[in-house]
Length: 226
Image (cartoon, rainbow, N blue to C red; front, side, top):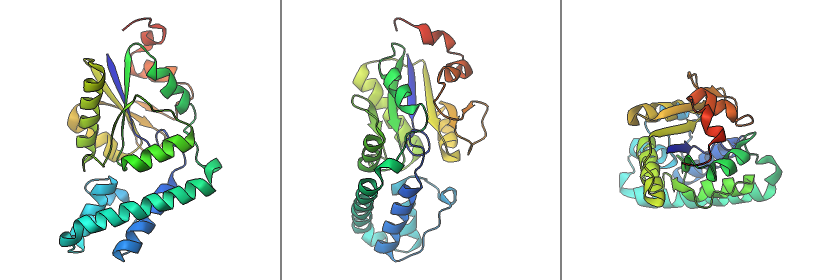
């Protein structure tokens, strides 16, 4: 059985700058600091990881729980307002909805989502963009701080939920931090979009048969049983 693990922002959801803007605004309002948009400068590029590093830098460890709680609540509030006012701007990456729907019913694939965002925000965006991820195993920074921990937990939950034994674990992501985390875990990596150079890379999910070809799984397209 093949485990296909998916990132959210930049992978399943195409235009996601608003998410970064809402996060940055929430952090700045709660902490009173200016936040860079160079996410690669942080050790753990997850919402919790970035916030935790900022808390350490500002010497506010004693207020960690309050800051985490207030930033998350404000961020989710800003996100809800944005989605309510700009629903048509929230788009799935071309082909991604069909890919998810088809892979959910594919006999040789188990789907999981592993995102560096909070679970509440990820599910909010996926629903607004038109995805149905019911029945899909899910892990986020609500569960763990680092990308590799989130991915490992998503794989564990997928195994627990389905009872499947995975011969391959493939992660689809758009960031260098995704690529590094898959390397740490020994997972295969498929770069989505143009941000990451990798030998297995796709522009989007519009022609997902190309994904199977790149992974050497072309025979799966006509598979009838696991």
